[in-house]
Each structure stands twice: as C-alpha cells, then as structure tokens.
Amino acid sequence: TGDGHTIHAWVHGPQDEKVRGAVIVAPALAREEVVSHRSMRLVAARAAQAGWLVLRLAWSGTSESGERPAGSDPVAVWHRDLEVAHRTSRELVGPELPVHGIGLRIGAAVLATSPLPFERRVLWEPVSGAVYMRQYMGLRRASGLDLPPVVEDGVEIGGAHFTNAEAGAIRALPDPRKLSTPGLVPVREEDRT
Picture 1 (cartoon, rainbow, N blue to C red):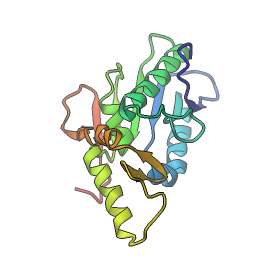
Picture 2 (picture 1 turned 180 degrees about the vertical axis):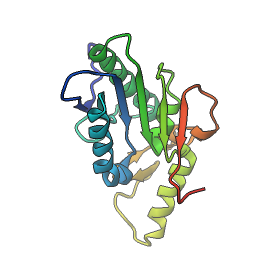
Picture 3 (picture 1 turned 135 degrees about the horizontal axis):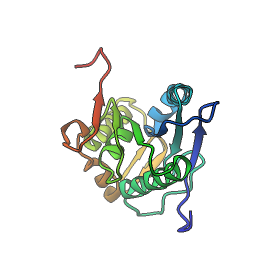
C-alpha cells in the first residue's frame, strides 16, 4: 500500500471471471490457524466456484505478512489488515458489488468489531478475546511443561509473544455474538450449544 502497511493474501476467483462480489476470510490465529488452514482454503475455493472473488489474508505478524510493529495494539493492526483487504477487494470488484467477510474464532471477533462496511459478516465459531486468551493460557499450563519461550512481560501464544498491554487489547475484544452490528451472522457447529 502507499502507507507502507502490507499484508499477504491468497486470491481465489471464479474461472469464468463473472464475479458476484468479494469475500474476505479473516482466519484464526496461532495453532488454530494452522489446524484450520486447509478448511479455510476449501471455503475460499468453493466460494470462488460459486462466483465470488475471495481474499484469504494472513494477519500482520503471521505467515508471509509483515511483522506487527513492536508495542502496537494487535487488534488495531489487524483492523488495519482488514482495511487493506477491503480496499483491495473494492478495487478488484468495483463499487457496486458486495463485500462480505468470513471470520473464524478470534478472526470472527476482529471482523465483527471492524468499522468497515461489510454487507454480511459470517462469524464461524466466534469467541471473545478473553475466552481466546484463557483457552490458550490454560492449554499452555495444562501441558505441565516449562515450554519456551519463557517471557518476563506478557504471554506467549502459539509462538507469538504479546506484552501485557498487547494481551490486554486482545482480551478486550467482545463476544461477537453479543454485538448488534447489522449483518452479523454467527455460526456454531451443530455439536455445540
């Protein structure tokens, strides 16, 4: 981008080039992103077969995207990642066609709290930032091992270090199912209540 904020994204498009609109995939983070990578790729491929242009983004500080600036508010940076993806989608499909979002787990919370004008936001197994952090910290403690890296300030989640302030910003993400933003579509698996 012109402001130096870049992200890595995979683009999936329909073979006949007749585009119905765009879909931005906001992935999970850490271990959940790794485990769900193939499923999200299949979601994108199926949406492309149905005529959608799909951008699967990699959050700043993950995969091939640039590093998240040290000491930055991760949620603000991830909202900016969505802004880059949304602007790119608009450039590719034009101003008339809809832009939707699909977010998984913590990606759903980031998507749901974005101020961008998504027509629909599908929130797949959404969690609040507090639940996400509690689950990862519990998983780390339950291992019973003194796993590296041991950090003095903050927490480590799936190999990513967050200072206490950065972790606090993630914890502050609300439960997306409790938001009244128009166009939110929470989806829970059938084996869940």
